[in-house]
Image (cartoon, rainbow, N blue to C red; front, side, top):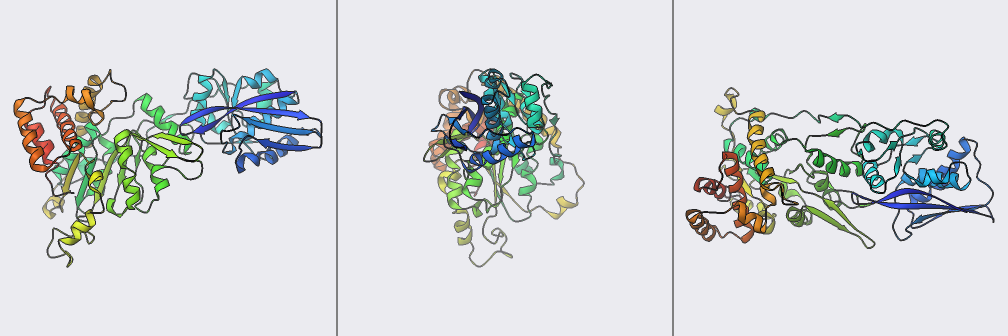
Length: 502
């Protein structure tokens, strides 16, 4: 007789249902797991055996075969321990087979029978809801999985508690969702003295999700500006928070089941490898660009990143997702982020200052920023030079606008975009507009078309650059509360491509 339990295997943020079949048959005592298990899944045999012996449940001296179906789908992770144990218990008639078959289970077993936390509880709960099953997961994962209200989440602390629940001896109450966390304390934009043009670029970037490149000498405030971007962005919507949290769940970044409404801010070091940035490695885990989904990816010392790493950003910037290709699978992760890059003007960092620049001026600047390819630079909507701050500004009393004031204007502009793109799937901000949607929202009058034609010819704008100028102009108009793009909006948008950056 074959008994079955159910669990999931992860493909990106998607959780595919896996049937764990257990057959106990006469023959030489053996315990085997088949169905493309990885090392962690194969080692489940010893963990399950030890956990059952702790509860005085001895495996019969027969041949036990566990099949993970579909057999051609790779199975990775320690979360297969609990479903394998339940399938064996159902085959031995310790727990009701029909009850186990109506449950999606995941969890790692300790040798003493405790259930320890695993990654991916949130996507697993989504999969359980889609197939109308209850989710059974370790107690530390219950608060996280319970955010999916469409399914019942049972979170026992031990395998014994799970058995008692399934047999009806001691039913457990459904888990409750965790707290909505505030995230780390946000820094205020008023701390930045001077740099009014860079602050304006930051506001435009936040309002329309436009990618921003800042170039300036060391200590001019580039990192300081970028770190205050989160404070002017609106909080995540419930749908965005759930979408972002599913990626963070797979990466094991959710603690105590709490979900944050603060937009993620990822700042990888320039020595990060390609799998760390775009995803991959063992299990094709999400990279920094996916962890920054619906938030900010800040790449300081941008030219210092390896050239192949930088070039892999080109496609995700355009499509909003990344596909990690493997011989036996293609894993897709969403990665719609706001890219903020910061760079020195040259290797020594003091190209504009003749007294401090190196002897290779001006070739050192061209060589250094030349590490950023033209196609990648063309994808930055806003390019701004960040000059050194005057000592007079440093000594001045704080008087700039606070993050709350700027955030109010950004929120108003985003509300206009929400209404504008309400009927268009996949379009949330002006930076997402393409094709007919772009033509409709960025229509120019005769004078505006004349200005854009002259600017395109003079600046040598590519088709991509032309459209990005239109999107930035549309965002500037939204910040001004204007229904149509006017000449000043176009002029300001063009000014952010007239700098010597790139």
